[in-house]
Length: 217
Length: 302
Image (cartoon, each protein chain N blue to C red):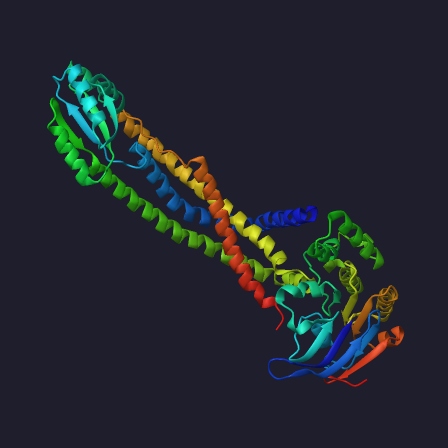
């Protein structure tokens, strides 16, 4: 489903975030990418969703070479993904409901269908009672769950989560781990980048360990 | 189709909400565009009115032939038949001396003076359209008509018609140049407004792009906003011109009453008003498109 072969990513200034990385992720797998900060975890996720492009090597997603996509094709690649960012990237001037509605408006769902899906997603993460609230009024854990609801509302086949448990206490982190597992159980490919050993231990996924841009195991 | 309509409906509502969110800035922007459009608009309105005033929308030079005052009805008929047979004459219009007097009384505001004259000082006349409107052809016609019996005077009105035409063409050129310059100003105003919006909505655009929004999707609300801004500006320009005309007509009616004539400037016709709206909206749309397309490229992956 996602495959890297000999991928190198060098940022302007010469820093090499990834060095000749090759890996394969099968449909329906749950993968945790670990490594210390600066090891290249976030870069790996960004390459998958075509937020960054590799300098050498190829990244294939569903058989498409991501590095050579036309700009107009990128949005359609990204609709395969549910993206959870380290900094949430919620829209703070819109309600919880409107935040989750955004992906459906972008894809172009009908009003009724969209409303149903938004409610289902909010119900799944336990935020159904707060749909009119603004994100700033939510706790850190609730904001993270809102980010999940937005990531999965359009039922993507791949969920990418970058440090999903950062800034969460242990109870929230455990809750979030269970949510991620439940998506894996219904067949979603879940790819998590984290340095949270507890999360990795709880989910018992396949692990990919990065060290200064190389895959070490 | 229903979803497509819904998407556009959302964008339209969003654009109006955006205008309402910053009412002062929106009003000032609309005002700038309105003033910019009012200038060429006012020029154009005056031009159209001058053109209408000359009674002849595309001045074709005519030849006026006046008979002697002692000409009899038979003489008039003979001249008429001569004119009708003439190979260079396209059309003739007969104006009897009574009709000419009635026209003069009605139009010139000199009714009192004419009434004091006692008799009718005007001759019978013909207004002749020639087939060939070149100056040389008209002059040879004039010389020919002059030799006919009982013809007192033949007059070419081509000279003043040409002068008016040249002046009108100059006016049209001024309107065009002014219009082009201020159309550019309209595009520039929307360009900058949209650029500012894109900067302030950076986060939102970035998130939308990450989630899979296409550039046309992101551009659409800005295009609606630009078109609305242009349209509102166009209507403002129209209203400014209306106000100006109202003031001017107030003065003109005082002036024209003194001369016993009716002078009133007309505002834009319905088709012209519609084209103004479409034109202003299209320019706003263009400015928004240029701005959005230029500024969205920065979000593409490196």
